[in-house]
Amino acid sequence: MKFSVSLYSFFKSIRSGALTPMECIAKAKELGFDAIEVVDFVNADCSPEEMPQRAKEIRAEADKYGLEISSVAIGADFLNGSDGNTAKEVERVKGYVDFAAALGAPRMRHDVTQGFPKGSGKCGSYDSVIPLLVEPIREVAEYAASKGVMTMTENHGFFSQDSERVEKLYNAVNHPNFALLCDIGNFMCADENPALAVARVAPYTKYVHAKDFVLKSFYDADPGEGAFQTRAGNYLRGTIIGHGNVPVKQCLHTLKAAGYDDTIAIEFEGMEDSVEAVRIGLANLKRYWEEV
Image: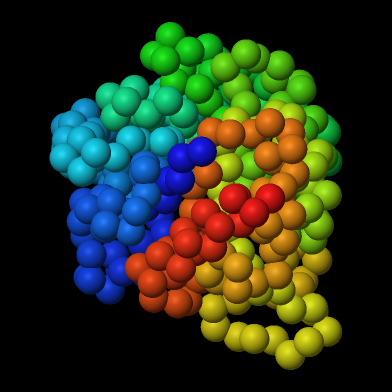
């Protein structure tokens, strides 16, 4: 088992100026991680022409500290992205495949769609849009295979978040270079029990995000700043792994029982100090994995 950290986890420290995105790589090594996950808006905030050089710089810094690059995470939307031009969005995502390949990352996670925008006058079930998503996803997966990069989608973004939905998408795409990234916390955004959801997607999972949330019912007092609402209006706030309501240890048990033994990446998005939160979260995560 290898433990990685999404560099998005340090976003609070980056935003405050305490760390630069490049300094987060050294911090990951200091905290005891085996690998890092690169994120588009954190590490590739540059023009497409500048991305090859950025990839070289990140790869060199990771090599300096003996860290693998476990994955690249990017946003994408094959219904609405690139001004609704699906072909253009596919080409944009392929550019990030090249970025991932230059980094030496074996995987890349891309979103698939946020669904129909509010006020667009369009609506439809998840099942109704799957046929519109399959070919763009396959095209990207096929291109990525030629670069040695596996593509994945994640239970993320509210619309494509439930275990049943991502399972249907995975089976509809049916491509050997396309897999699922299982984020054990994100199922709660769709008001789903993470333990049951992980059990559904474990057979298709090729990469894992470990995350925790504090959950409050809609009928409790609104916690205000720092929290957001689930699809059904309950309240979530990101927190340190082991400090929230996600059954992290149970989810790890299910993944291990299904034979998962690859990489788990922490993705912290809470209000606590990011460095301390990631340090404590890694200690808890390693302990839970050994105990299950």
